[in-house]
Image (cartoon, rainbow, N blue to C red; front, top):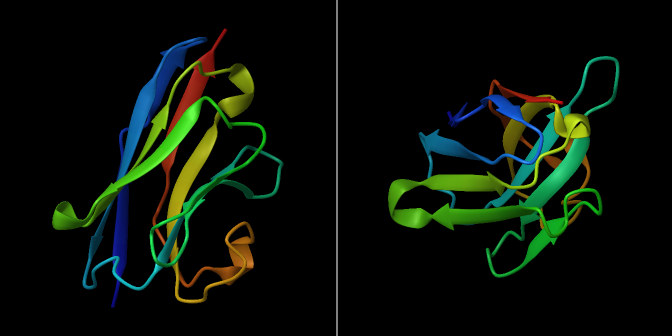
Length: 124
């Protein structure tokens, strides 16, 4: 059984930065695609960033491109989301997820395992 635990969320002012972490237990990231999603109140869960299943490619939503960076530390079985130049519209619960398939990195339905989420609030 895979468990994903996110951390690093919090309250930050506009223009500030946060780094989210997602650590997996029960299975390594090897062979899985890894994604970050977010969900704001009253909205659907949306794609933020992802690694390809092999880990050699990264993908970003247009809304975060140039501001967010996904990275990983395989030795720690941890993936990170560095978020810079935060905006009020970035306020959401952020989730990490693993997918076994090679396709559908931007679709929540493609992912097999999810963390519990961590709240990010950007105040103006």
